[in-house]
Image 1 (cartoon, rainbow, N blue to C red):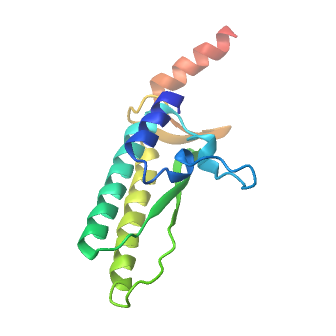
Image 2: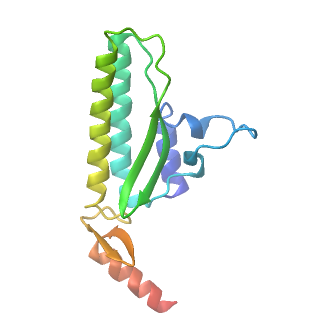
Image 3: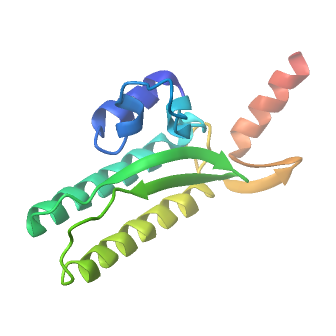
Length: 158
């Protein structure tokens, strides 16, 4: 993903991209997200909408239950032709027993949203966002026919 598109996400969802915006500690191993989002711009909308849904769900949950459950994105990348979205939950300490089942439901909803986004990527061109299918021509990739032709022409010119 281009640096400009990444920055757009980092600024729009600072609570999710804490590790990117945090000052770098030379003694600490950097999280993978610090190296950027490892996919092309075609999946930007999928990632943007997923982040919006997660951030909104977290804010509503925390306001409703007067708590501070947090989620941090660890890595976003392409793998085997599809989007992979890795995240971790902040430490959930001092939670009442009655709140734990509600947190489990929140986690399930977010996991479902992540799975939906990952599955949508398998039908969305990673380069231009047009409808596409995941194929295996050497490597797994999800690109539309127009982008496949464009890339073949580009390689022939080299």
